[in-house]
Length: 229
Image (cartoon, helix red, strand yellow):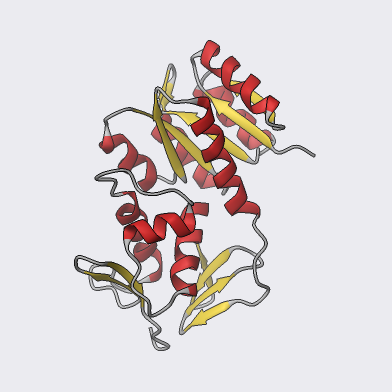
């Protein structure tokens, strides 16, 4: 069955254009013109991916993203205003997996959609990774700390898994983005830092004094192989 994309966007002409483009690429497409109907659609029949506009007539896209994330781990691709990095950072902090700035080329949107869905459905090794109290279950795409499941977005899970699979190796921000998303960072893009902060918040005892994911000044990040953390 074709994968299902839901777009929550108040610009009906834009949504029609995107729907036709994604439909030609083989996806099922549905459109909601406001926050209320979009949330109802997500709750009723969760799609494979949500394309979410930041500005909606009856609510803030950031709030919609928060509410989606409270109920489901459906990937969210957020549409943001060009040149406004604050919107992008906040969007990532509330649970968006990726973002596309407006105005956008439909080909870029399609590439981002494919990348998010590919990460979501990619086959993985059957064994879990264990580092002390931290366990990354590749079959269930679940992260547990001391046996308790923690909440990460799909993108954050992929980022953590990538670092764990390269434990002990310093990875630059560009290397991480290329390994996880398959695209280079844009100039001054700090989205990796935002995701790392969110991951630390749920896996570290003290996110301000991390022991598992360490910053290597001027180089990037390294996942420590500690077994007692």
